[in-house]
Length: 417
Image (tube, rainbow, N blue to C red; front, side, top):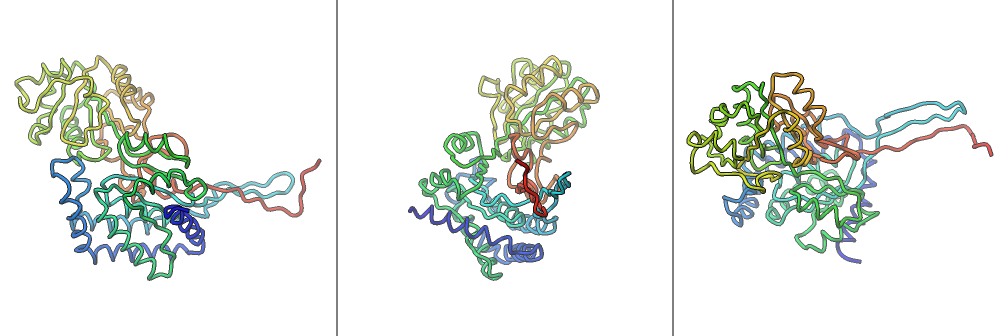
């Protein structure tokens, strides 16, 4: 038996002990974890600096990888938020009594062991643990090799807290950079109950194509915002700026602005704030002509076939010109990853058409797509943004990390022959 399989068996066994913990026990562990994160900020930043030293600052993943005192404080705050949320296990979702006297109840239960594969984002380590622990799940973590030092110190802190509370530390397992361990997790049917990949298309496709364990797809965000003929210019300028520049390296950031052809003359003003942030624009022919001489020459380029359907994860954005809202929806349908899509419009009919027709986990009207986030949705932290339709869709918080079982109580009833 491989060392990886031994880890999975230990994690599966440990997961079964979580039912013995009360909600108060769980909350106390999470609160202590948050405090220890703050107490060990120096150790965390030292480990993170080792990871950062191996990555160029120009790399789009650098911002995702980087931890600061402020970000560690934010992570600790998210952990405390999870502790304060309602316990999702044991909730009676449905109950009824059959004519034969059988009493049925549908009760929420943990998924079991959740495997998460993610890239250079050490905050995910804390998010996943806190959400899994609060929902009664154990977790197997496979972070990107770029964040290995950061992930190791964070898991050490988690296990220190678990030991303090006499809880089996195997409820959280961090895999090494050995690809064989990752391959073993993808084949760990019966030991790992579900795998959630968080990252780009290549990672998600690889996991989906190679996993024998059920997969929930999250992460990749090819995000559009459509500026309609009726769109308010002032609102549009602020929304587009926020959606593109708030954190360009995350999955809810704007990638493609779709603009109605009647508003091309407004395009220079619409993008005025982006120019100040040196956002590179890849414009189709009509948009390019509208911006030529009115947007920085160094930052304005003509779009090609690769400019659409691309998650840029940087200060880069493409522009597509359309004739109406129907053409906008058609373009989005062709290139969307079904993550987050938005319309800026005052025409209610256009808004209604867009919301009804666009197929995405989150659809916005007159606001920024960067709100697609578990904390922003009031879910505490999130384990990812599910872009599929089975089990969960959108930000995956505590309730999305549970399943259910039917409990049937009787008084000797047998099914008639």
